[in-house]
Amino acid sequence: MSTRNIVRFWEWGKKIICVGRNYADHAIELKNAIPSEPVLFLKPPSAYIREGSPILVPFYTSNLHHEVELGVVIGKGGTAIPQSSAMDHVAGYVLCLDMTARDIQDECKAKGLPWTLAKAFNTSCPISDFIPKEKIPDPGSINLWLKVNDILKQSGSTSQMIFSIPFLINYISEIISLEEGDLILTGTPKGVSSVQEHDELQAGIDGIVTMTFKVDRKS
Ligand SMILES: CC(=O)CC(=O)C(=O)O
Ligand SMILES: [Mg+2]
Picture 1 (cartoon, rainbow, N blue to C red):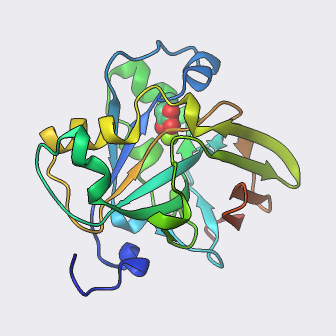
Picture 2 (cartoon, rainbow, N blue to C red):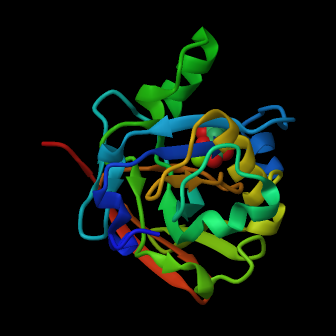
């Protein structure tokens, strides 16, 4: 691993690779088929925000959704990384929100267009502090939750993921080489819902981290 400080990986401008429909209960709530292979899409590094900065509602949506997800921070790059050594490439984790303009995503799906406008806008990837790998010995068995204005909306265990973290690292790195500082969003459990200007989103991983973000509209 390099001497760069991985705890500020979001400043490096590396890739954000997102996995969709990785929890059957979420695929079902949106009436999507349960995938037999991972569904992948990308966000640009300009999507990152940290606590203290607001989530900005894009002007073109009237249905912005939260999706709480475990993010995997890559510490050592590679291509076609075998599942057996995949966890050696992980530096740590972050809690992430995959903010999604659901109305636009539905339109894109209907027209067979990519999800860029729905998923990749500025502020669409709020993240927590970096969590070193040692703090989560079993990332396949942690509980993620999200509240909107103190009301619990999402609560799910990473044990419900269809594709495990080693499987995803292998699958993604066969297609897109992974680099130090890349982030993989591993999908969201059920309970996604609409957020409005002035809402407060609080999310956490039980016993590990919490984070809070306000929703605002660009003036
Ligand atoms: C339907 C989606 O938006 C897929 C997605 O991002 C997920 O986490 O699942
Ligand atoms: Mg998602």
